[in-house]
Image 1 (cartoon, rainbow, N blue to C red):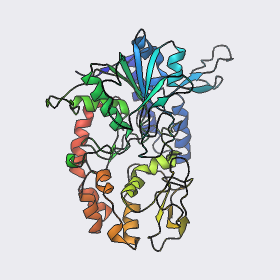
Image 2: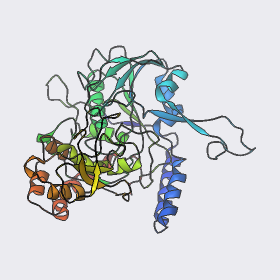
Image 3: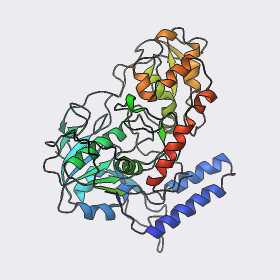
Length: 434
């Protein structure tokens, strides 16, 4: 069953998308400082799926509702006036935006919210990467919180009992190994098995339309890579949900072999196209504190599969890297326990490496720092661990690095896989793709 895409005004959405896209193309030669300011100006008018309550609230009335969300699930409301006569408070600066949790917003609108489901890092988004999360209760609303990063990652039939419709509202960062899209897969699969409709509140991808990296080989499938896609997929969470459904990647737990499809409704973003810079209003997880870390995440996350720290246990997570084994590198840091890293790699040990916190924004992913670290390590035998192949999605990258291939040579081996993926991806796009 194809996803149902709800547009309040299809023509207006198309016109705004094309117009803003053309505006960005026309200004491509402007100075970077001016472009940055313009992107911030455009961001004021982007409305996420969660911001468009007039579309999805009617779908929830008189229903028992469950929601998979965390601290990134917010919606922006306008603070009431005063605005000068004739001035639209939605498009002017005279009314201030403020954010509210999607959970609190649904309750305020008299929606019968029954259960909260939480992904990796928990409902509040403070748990360590990989830390098992227990079920609990939200102290503010009293609602039960069911962990999907504890005893099970896929909701059980019992955990979905009493739910008529599910909502998914998480901010993704556009990377295959960021586990929110794996939680999306399992939720879609469980909803399909239990005949529960799913509404995805879409949000922009901070990596835009960028597609980059090796395509996952299914023999290396894991929770940090479930589908045959590149590391950067260039899709929003709503587009990706459509791909999961359309490519029939949902598999029933019964073992019948018959692929499932979820009753999916995507509430798309408004006034958005992928040429726009999008700065996340809330950090998506404890170790991605700012735009720089989110931009570098795809490149530095490879270090999770090595003996190199990428800054967990510091205030510059995913903005620095280093280890006690790197030579000829002047920058130093010493990881210590902090929020999101109770026992960081090389805890209390001086590391040598590089500070990238002022590095310019990169469009795709870079292998520069991974190749440099391997070249400069004093212990090549212990550089890689078993997690590296899962992150890469292929065993070829590790072999290529050991052979000391250049980044250009390695990238040549990705090309055909990326092109095949892009051709498949076209069918599921909701926004202008620049």
